[in-house]
Image 1 (cartoon, each protein chain N blue to C red):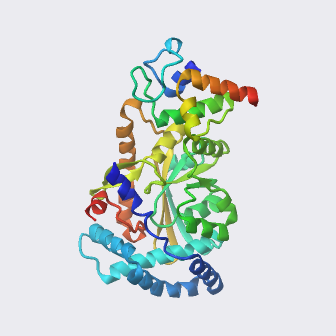
Image 2 (spheres, rainbow over the protein chains, first blue to last red):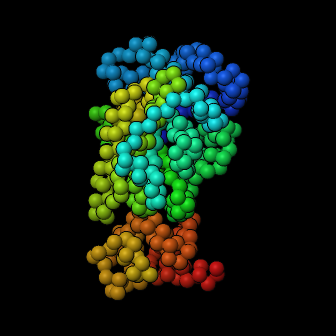
Length: 309
Length: 83
């Protein structure tokens, strides 16, 4: 357990990439230049991330080495950071409501569609893979999905600040996961009763949340238990959501229903949680293999990797 | 309250009528129901649904409230009187 905790601490130990000043400058520049001109800055920005990224740049390199099964070339590494920079830039336009210029494809089968529009609400599991803003925007404008983001405000303070600058309405809807046990459940229940969907992070544990270790791309990695516990207690379905950046102005949103109901029998709670987390890891893996440059977990994601360091 | 507990937690092996109000709910002591944190969330939801009372995770007080069926019932009673 202690090494799991150490592994899940790894990403939180990293300083956030940019300072508030840099962030404000980027937002101002992006809005002043407009997307076509701002995109001219993406390769220089990617090169900057690649050269100054330190631990994050190394983690990205190790990830590419594993997924490509060979030593990544400079061009692979640059492409990866270019994708990151592009998604980061597009956040600004998407949150600002300038979503009209984007071409967004949606993959969603009938059962999943019925689930996300159903009266029961659902847990929508997102990952640090591609863009979740593209889904938030879709959530509010195109399909009228009332999505509430659940995140720990103490971590990712910068992300919250960006959200508050660009889209105060969405920021106000954030449910703070720093609340403990029953309070959080009751807050989530209230949102569900209002017909809203709960957006949770599926790939990173928040705060002191317990984790479960399951195979991901052939190696052990720890995933949070929280989403499965919450879905089981609240008796709602779990839908996975991936917003994959495909270059240019193209995004692909994939919605996949993982479970109509999460059942954690008392006698086999841990095994049941591991089974759900394992199923999620397998679906995540399939998406990551299709678009590896969208992987934005720039830290030792695998437990064996974290333990070896 | 005993019925609420047994129903909310699917405690098939426990008879609500026979449940001793002083049985410890959590922990590994002999005779304890040995509930876990997930059960605590279930109880909080069930109590909120039935009595409209929000059990909050504050510290030691929560430990006392959840100590036994009797303590939980007493707490719910107190909250209902005050509201």
